[in-house]
Length: 390
Image (cartoon, rainbow, N blue to C red; front, side, top):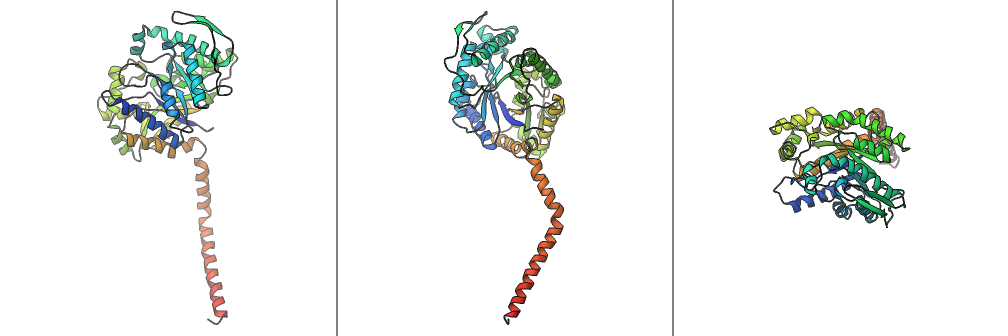
């Protein structure tokens, strides 16, 4: 297995009624913690309704996070292309590419919350078509100096072009969100982009993993592009602690709100979750494969399961941020994943395990030799003292 990248997909999810300023500052502090722990990527969402996913602009969040971090890459997870003029999407991401000196990534999607779209007269039947049109325009603007002229029911571009070229050479990572439909996989293949499998651990998303990769590779071949598994990112749910019992106690803090949001508020049927009590919710997460609540072994097992289902592997595993636990337990979970899970998938664990095994195998003989060397030194010293006459 090649070095697997680790990151976070931060919608974010916050309980309505809490202090939103503190909640958003907490999101930025979490990204700082991930940067400290050695995570590779953080993707930040865009939502405009329903009172839970509070970030309205991933670009603004990225600008703030970039000044608080040193190494971690920061992506739009995702820009809802159907809500925006694609010229401005391209302009903003290029500006961020310069401000972050190449640490930015562009994630694109159709828009997940119907309650967002209806406020601007947008129906769900329109969003995927607009994503398709918008991604074509954005790709041309980012990769070519040729002007773009395009008109549909929502956009009218006339000799549009960027006045600032990207900082990254040749270009920062671009990825498309994919849940259950083939739209994201099709566009990723068509444009040679990466794929963000946001619902990878849902029943529909898990079953579609290999199919999505087949769609991507077919489209890539048809359009002269290269399918690159290192650009495929899978999103999953985990919360871990030192013991399973501790992890279960931790998620009592907020798992019920998260479930109620998808059961009663968000019109997002791909995230159908079942459970009325905290114990039922934990059982559903672990039993359905949607996530892993427990120890580091449970998190590693979920990644292995996704690896096998992908039928060839992927490039990054992104933890879907969820606020099931309080701040301290959440940070501890991410630290434990960095400490105990990441090395298993990044080539660091086996070398130290092998070194410890080799030392163990020869310990008895070497310890005996060491003890004998000490006895010999004592004997020599005794002889020296005796020779001097005591």
